[in-house]
Length: 99
Image (cartoon, rainbow, N blue to C red; front, side, top):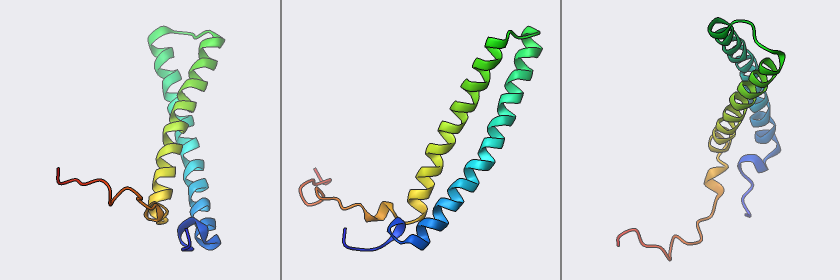
């Protein structure tokens, strides 16, 4: 890679990572809201919950929410900064899509 683009440029990288952190902070709040809704639903359906079930629900719902959010945010970060365009397809001459 000889071109200095996308996340190789410190200014673009700083802006992109600041945006990523801002998105993740908001999504952490969204995850907390989902945890609260899940606990309310479980309490409504089953009554008082054992402590271990509360802990498992909090960890499971929040971790799943943040994992999905983080992966999608990284995909948008990569696409939005032009990082995806830097990939060199070394097989494009060897593979024919006309077959």
